[in-house]
Length: 316
Image 1 (cartoon, helix red, strand yellow):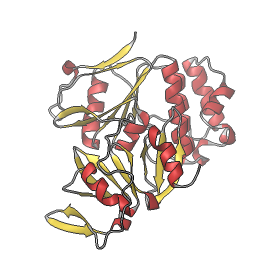
Image 2 (cartoon, helix red, strand yellow):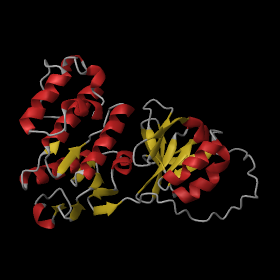
Image 3 (cartoon, rainbow, N blue to C red):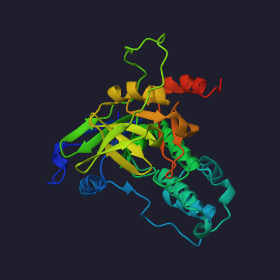
């Protein structure tokens, strides 16, 4: 069985903690970290074994059409998958005759995916592969990951967004100064609630959510909140692109917010159902919720919660 291993001996950077990670073939591991730690990890990988990092930085031929770019790299790498099949796999049929410099950023990203796929390199390491692209492109990348797994390739994905790590990885990890820790991926095993379903929620009177900003305590109205996520055991309140630390765990705040239309959609997330604009179905039985805020944020939806949330929105 082929595998990819990051070993203690590889890490010679004072900016990185020492850790070991083995990725077996047909498996995708995602590492979530801040951008500085991510950059150091990329240097380590490049300096040990010269592992290529697929980060969309290597050039494509801007004046060639999409199809011409695909044909060039198809021949360069000796890819056995027919070109028409590559165009379909990466959703490039509609822009195949368009010069690359006239394409959207998401179209160009899918050409990058196609190039990386045709290279046949193993292992494959992707850096921020779905940052700033549309939903169709994200879905295309997820489909490509499944193809790589079918080809028995180990894959490592480096991201600075926890939702991307949970979405893309068979296993997701958080890398910080204290080391590498697994991120709990919701497997559907929920703790039994203390609150019996026979208890009818009553509308609370005046209620504010406290959160810290520097040394100040700010009070937020529940309708303002987009969602709440767990970071290092503490709850972080999110409004648009701003996050605020709370002195509560998700379990503690969940009970208080249920009456205001908030829902525990994932082990690490509570969402304001009034802010949900779309339920997104990805490949491999994976779901996300798109939030109606300025960033159009997406957060994970546990596969065991899909039926429940469809019922809440009267979709079934």
